[in-house]
Length: 282
Image (tube, rainbow, N blue to C red; front, side):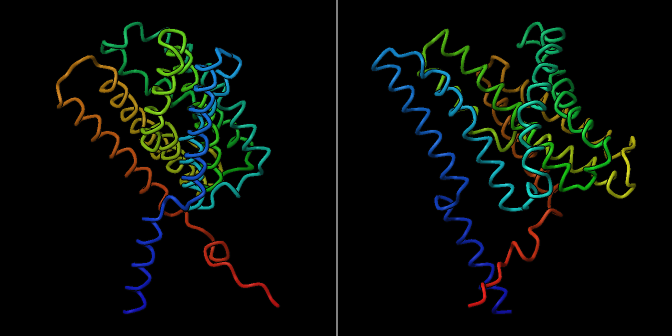
C-alpha cells in the first residue's frame, strides 16, 4: 500500500514538472523562434522571414501535443517514420484542400447557422487519407490508426493555422499574425488532433477486432460525435456576441473534446520495455 502511494506521488510530481518535458521545450523553443522572426521583420522590414514566423507559430502547439501524446502512449513507433511524414505532408494537404473547397461551397457566412456543417466537412476530409491507408490492410491496429490520424491532423492543423496567420499578417501585420497563431495554439489540445485521434481510436478498435475495414457503429458514432464537437467549437468561437454563456459553452466543448480523447485512447499505453527501461549490462 505504501509503495503504491509513493508511486502516485511521484507520478503527480512528474506531471507538475512539465517544463522539463521535451514536448514543452519544443513548444517554447518554436514559439520563441516565431516571435524572434517577427521581431526581425519589424526591425529590418525583411519580409523574407515571414513564412518562417508563420510556420514556427503554427506548428509549435500541434507538434508539442503530438509529442506529449506519444510520450504517454508510444503510438508513433507503430508506423514507419516515412509513412507518418507522408501523412503529414500529403494527408494533411489533401484533407485541407478538400475541407477548404467544401467549406467555401457550403459556408458563406461564418456568423450564421451554416458554420455548423464545418465539423462534418473537415472531420470527413481528415479521415479520408487515414481510411485509404487502412484499406491497404497494413495498418489496422488501434495504435497505428491513431498515429496515422494524428499525422494527418497535424498537417491539417499546421497548414490551416498558417493560412489564418497569413490573413492576419496581410490585414493587420505580423504582430497580429503571431497573436492569432499563439491563441490558436492554446486551443490545440481540444481541437483537430484530439477529434481525429478520437475518431481513429473508435474506428480502428472495431477494425482491429474484425481484421478488416467495415462500416461499424463505432465508426458512424465516432464520426457524428467528433463532427458535432467540431461544429459546436467553431460555432461558439466565431459567433459575434459578448454573452459570457457562449464562452462557457466553448470551454465546455473544449474540455469534453479532450476528456473524450483521453478516454478513447486510454488503452494505448507504453510497452513495458519503453515504460521501464532496463539498465544496460556492465
